[in-house]
Structure formats: structure tokens, C-alpha cells
Length: 579
Image (cartoon, rainbow, N blue to C red):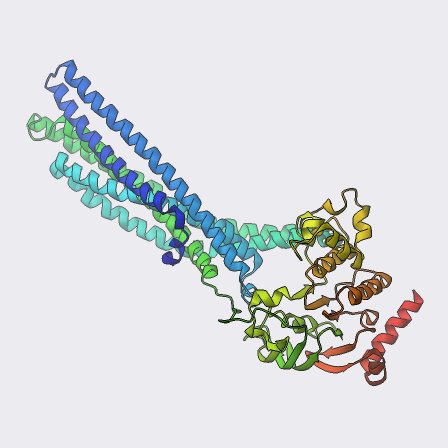
């Protein structure tokens, strides 16, 4: 796990190495100061001159200044390394997520991925900073302070033999009890983020159905569960501080009592005041280093679960990969489904598509109709290889889609969904997702064909009008037309309209379909629709039922041979006449 995370250090190796080096030098100096102080105390007791005191004082000032400088340098290096590490970690996570297939994305909820990119990375960042600074400082300080304690205090330093194991055992039981709780905490974080995300995305629906109280209650439950788990963990970790303080005071009382007794009974011959003062400082340094070390263990305990969650994403390989020597050119827009069956996962109880055998010629316009749940979208998602067929073969341009480079294939297939997403930015910036090099004239032409130019020009800033996140400041029909224009700019071999004119009126829908024929005459057009009027002029219409093809033909042929098609057409025609 840690080997995977360490790969994200990269260009921050230098500050990562310098931080512990500076810390080590700082510890050596800090452990030297009490020794010099003890010498000074003994010199004063022996009746030294002012010059001796001044000399020792200057030495202590220099050592303190060096310690301060090294502490600043180590803190600066640790902050640089930890922040850079976190930046690279988020970048690696985000980049890997971008490579995921739909199947990979289905394994992680969006709220969970957000938590991993934010909270989990922050936990790992804090732990990393502690590991390269405090986790180096504390053990070194512990070792040096104990060595100096035995040199200065002799048998009195044996108190550490009792105190340190006692602290270690206590810390072990604290971490052992807290670790499972932190593992549960991050699942609660996911639930809380999911509640927030759903509420924010669906705020219009929430208000339309007056469900604010229900959403508040749902959020309150998630927040309360998180509070309870954190409280339980913090109650366990709360034993750490008092336990450390207890051992510190026991240590001080022991050293003061027996140190003072030894000085009084021996007249300072075996143990003097300078040694006592230095031993007190070393004992304080020893226990403080243990306390800091316990904080590191706590932080690492929290970060351990975060690390596992991060590595899950980093280690996830896309289920769809481009083959070696992949085909880079899509010769035409022909599409063949050769006895294709498909299900979304191995655990799925039923096939989404079953033995689909369909052959579409390049440049042909195909309409697809079917009831809700008939797997219309599932069918077209296999064309740009967003999923792989479970059995059978999908061919584009006469070649198996698995032979193509994924980028090359998807660049030749444009998909316009019913609920297409617009990103925050100007209208022009959103349109250029289809073609980053498109000129202003090309943008306008595509929008004219998509019947979007008129409403864009009605805005005061025209094509520079800013779109809010998710396209919340434009209507559903406007959003669909902008999405169609964006797809047209790509000039693909295959254009898929997945119920993408459902929010526009039939007159505008007809204009868009007419424009498609003139703007992209050689492009294969696959139109999924609920309205027969949207596909009735297609070269062929495919009727789907329960994941299989029930019939294929022109509008006139299906009226004669397919009762279900005829029923849909007649019911929609009557509804249109009544309107």
C-alpha cells in the first residue's frame, strides 16, 4: 500500500529527505543544551567568574539559534513535501478516474470518490508530514535523551525502564480499540457526502415536492451517525493525554525525590545539582517525545484506512484497454451487432441485451424505439465501447471495436444524451468540447443546424454568455440543442441521439433532423426516441423489447407488420390531434 502511495512523491523527494535531516540535527543540538546547562550550573556552584558564565551563555544562545533555524527549515521542508505529495496524489487519483470505464465507475459511488479526493487525501497528507518530521524527531529524541539521562543520572534513569513499556502497552490498546471505529467512520463520511450531493443536485425536485423536511431528516441521521462514531473514537483516544501526563508527573516526582535525597546524603559527590537539572530536562524530553509519538500513531491509524481507500482507486485498472498495435483510423460509420448479449456485471441477474443481430450501413439513419427498460441506451453504449459486450461482437467500420484505440474510436462517435451535462463556462467554451479548434463561424453554423443560434443571439453576451454549473441557467430544450451543436462540431463517423430532442417541440425536432441530413450526409445517425415522429423518416426503425429486437423496417413496413409500433403511432397521433 505504502509503495503505491510513495510513487506520488516524485519531484518532492528533495524536501522529503531534507526534512528528517534537519530534524535529526535539531534533536542533537536540543539534547546538547541540557548538558551544557548542567556544566554551567556546576561552574556557578563552584564560584566561577562572570567571564565563564558569559562564555557558557553565548554557547547556549548559539545552540538555541541553531535549533530554531533547523526547526524552521525542517518545518518548511515538511510542509513543501506534504503539500506537494497531496497535490500529486489528488492528480494521480483524478487522472486514474478519468481512465475508468463505466464498469469501473459503477463500482465506486461519486460521493465516495469525492471523499477519497478530499478528506482521505488530507488525512494522508497530515500523516505524511508527521512521518517525515515528528516521527523522525520523537524516536531520535527518545534515544538521545535516554542515553544522556543514563550518562548524567546513572541509576536514576532506570525509571524509564518502567515508564516507557507502560506507555507502550497503553498506547497499543488505545490504537487497537480505535482503529475499527475509524474504518467505519469513512463509510459514514461517504453516506453524508451522498446525502449532500443528492440534495444539491436535486434541489429543484426537493422544493417542487416540498421535501425539505425529509432531506433535513436524512442529512441529520447521516450527520448524527458520523458524530456518534467520531465521539466513540475520540473517547478512546482521550485516554492518551492523561496517561502521558500521569507518567510524566510520576517520572518527575521520582527524579526529584531520589535525586534530592542522593544530593543531600552524599553532599553532591555522587550526584550534583547540575546533573539533577539536566536529568529533569531529559526526562521531560523523553516523555514529550513519547507523547508526540503517540500522536503520530493516532494520525497514522486514521490515515491507514484513508490510504487503503485511496490505493483502491489508484490500483483500479480500467476494464477497457486499447490493444497493442491498436487501429487508429475508423474507415466509415457502419455498425454491426453480431449476436450480441450484454449484462452490466457478473452479478446481474438478467441480460440487458439478448442475442442482438443488427447491421447498419455507413451513412444510414436508424431510429430505435422501445418501452422504458428495453435497453435502448445499453445498445448504443456498446458502439463507442463504453462497455464491452458479454458475448457476440460489435463492429464499427468492419472491425471489432476491441481492435481500435479507445480515443480514436470515441473521437469518431458522438453521443448526445437526454440529460446532457453542460459545464461552467461560456457557451462557446462548452461548444468547443466538440472541437477545440472550431472557429466562431463553425460554432455559429453548428448552432444554426441545431436550432440553437436564435436563442443564443437573444442573450446580451451571445456566445460569450456564461453557463452556470450543470447548465442551470438555460432551459432543458436549450441545453439539448447546445449539446447537439457540440456533437455536430465533432463531425463524427457515427452520431447517436439518445432521446436528445425530448425537451423540444416537434417543429424544432423536425428542423434538427432535416439539418442533420444536409450537414452530415455521410455520418451514420442513430436516433433513440419516444416519439414516432422523431424517427418515422429514418431509413429503418428498430423496435426493442426486453433487450431483444422484435422487428426492423421502415415506418410504412412497421405499420403493416408490427402491432406494437402501430399502436404507439396511433396513440401518439390521436394525442397530437387532440392538442
